[in-house]
Length: 235
View 1 (cartoon, rainbow, N blue to C red):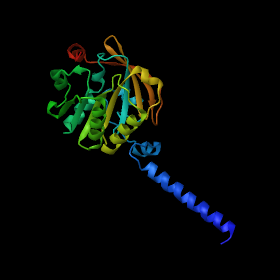
View 2: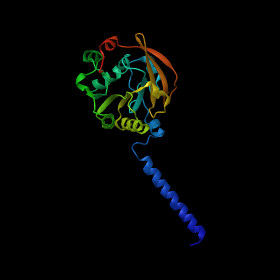
View 3: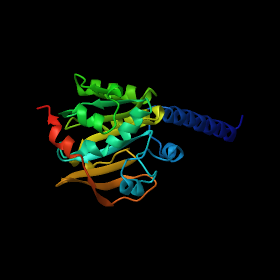
View 4: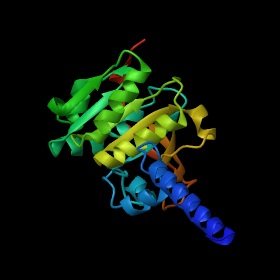
């Protein structure tokens, strides 16, 4: 065999090895691919707010994806933004899970919002690693219709966030993840990011990022006064 043939064979072998490594890398569950999100997008879950639906690319909350909600403090009525969608999920017979909420949920107000309480689970894992594991398992299980999680000021890596995004897609689950406002400056794999703030009896919502749609819009939504009064902090 000539030197030229040897070089060609070695080059082909090297390319084959690289392709194998790339396929193995892309098969990992913690790798997020934008192409997957483009193919997965479809009509969203009605948020219960016509003005918000009009701004969202799927005309509602994106199912099978993580939506990040950035707040500087809890107790501004932020949970009321999610209640219509969670109520619809539980009416369909699916489970909704709250992970590490910083308040004690007020059951009468949740029931009044249409949530089937027997379909609502509350989780407070012992540590954040346990919480991330439980969230990933629930999101990808296919048994959970909606999961709301609160990160607080616990450190969460980009890898962790990508795993949650992938798990939500695999389980076709509606995932809302509350993070501190300081995280707005950091990149995120979440397809939708909203900044929330309190403004009197209204909730201020600003779109920071959304796949397949515009960002930067800001709107004011009415919030549940009952929940504002009744939600009590854990500490």
